[in-house]
Length: 189
Image 1 (tube, rainbow, N blue to C red):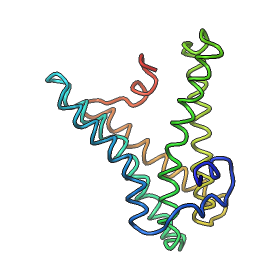
Image 2 (image 1 turned 90 degrees about the vertical axis):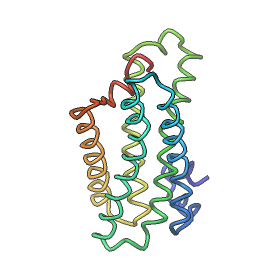
Image 3 (image 1 turned 90 degrees about the horizontal axis):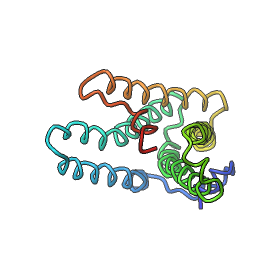
Image 4 (image 1 turned 60 degrees about the horizontal axis):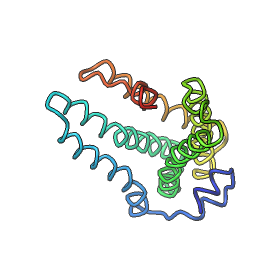
């Protein structure tokens, strides 16, 4: 319920989330599970593809953990560390909303406009729209969850995005040369 409320810009959704390390770990559990499944699947890949499989499995977890670290440091800087665990819990759960929205939008497109649904341009447009919504949601959860100004929430959103993007750029430059954009928008997209 809290994700649904926050996703629609209703600040009272923050009250649906618990505080403390147990709440944060519970919210982190799905990302850990997806990464674990990815690691197991990487072992099943043909030899020579293991490194890329491990990288693909760990990238979501690493980016999530980096965003948590950045947000905790920034919350401490702002003197909002007492609000951080509830914010982090809400942020982790709300992080799944854009993915679910993407799945729903693609499904509706396939039902209503089957020809358009397979168009690279329409899929890229949907992905861009979802990414913009994701940035807004990150900003909003930060603003409400940490009780900060709009500008402070913008700074947090930019910091998290830049640091996570930096990791993705490093992964692209260094072996095994993982390109997240090709993975997200490549042939399977």
